[in-house]
Image (tube, rainbow, N blue to C red; front, side):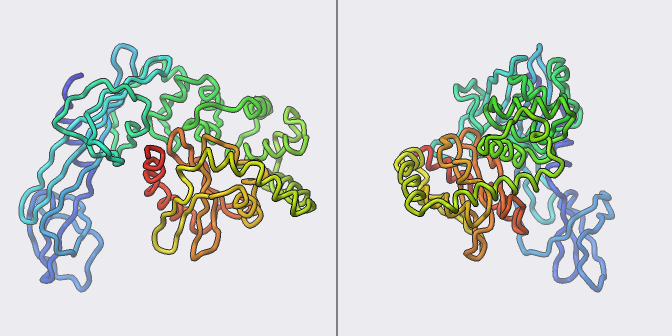
Length: 409
């Protein structure tokens, strides 16, 4: 591979870091980029100022730190002899008040995808026993890694060089520049390795594409229902809710090849109706039957999830914990009024279910894929997002490495 160009290097510096101006108590501003200082007599502290020397718009900082080191990922997308290649760099910025900013950049990972979606990864070594993505051994060489599919190499960079080169196969398989909230690697991998996911993208079923791109495969019963939806030009806008709805149709004995059921006008209403129906039927069961069913799968659940039982983390008034027993799945489904128990998520060996509480009150239920270490879905009561949805996702993604630690223990 050719070294990074000066134009690419400059783009990384300009887009990976937000320039700022340090303000002293006396109203002296210092530009982080060019180190120019000037005075402005303002009655208040503005959010942004413009450096009179270099002309850059700067975010104002009033803290007393004199030295700041920052780093961010930068990606260059290119092709080599039919391979789709993603080159990931770590960009470093060193700020010292009164001096021009110092930048450096180092390539740490290359992802090479064949036209069939097979991944080959060249990467630097990572420090042993580290669960952090960016703990690279910068003195090592880029070498072919045997665990090339490991999610630690799937880097979603702060900035991507805008001049990208896309292979003919990737274009043919439906890529048109959008990533739909996924990393470029997830998109390329999905459409190159699985023709079902390729079909979802080409047919404009972007919600379903996003949902299944980070999963191993599309279940056959879901795919049969998707074919019906595509044939009748039904756009699925909430893939997680729709797939749960299809599962509920199966559980209630409905024909999931019938477009009347597969393509509801009001998805949320039909989903809730079926979910309520199942809850009401289960409510009629005797308490001993609930206990018997829970006990039947208790040992199985403990055996498959024993590494994760007891895992708890949080931030502020948000607490997230793993469901430690099948009985807790019963309680979660009843309180949250969704299908986490009805659809027997405790049998899923490839995912982990957690309960998110705010101020001690159950607020959302989170499903994490143990294959990709990414959040598959996060649902509040009646499958609606709570007012704390974004905060819960932020805390969940921030602490997802704890699940990885348990897997490696």
